[in-house]
Length: 143
Image (tube, rainbow, N blue to C red; front, side):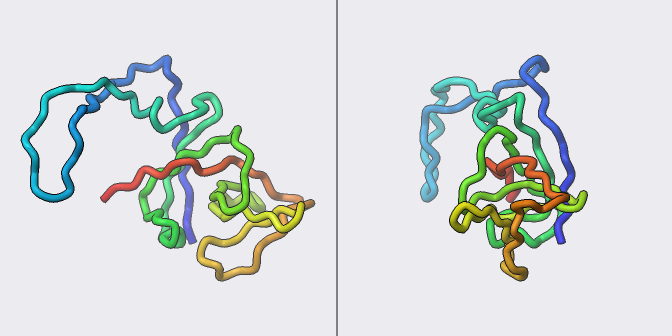
């Protein structure tokens, strides 16, 4: 069972240090000489967050999302504006518990499916204590 820690998003009113984005490519084999040409500077918030006012971060604790490449300690970027489509990961609250599920739609009826397929899909149409908090758009994963 995973637990999710909400982190939040700091808007652009704060100070962000932009990082250099080098023009050279990265070799996956034999190392290449270092090229000092900087293409531009990149603000990772601009790069990772499409809707700043409607986005927050959540840290995952647990291993149940490993099938999706999401590991313990990874940070999910969750957008509350994007409408979920079939097969997307969503953050939702079910009976007051935060959980990441796969959004499924069979006909016009939405369901939530567990990431590890250990449970039958949960029909959310008319589910009293269900709140869809947002769609997972990116994963920050440490190696």
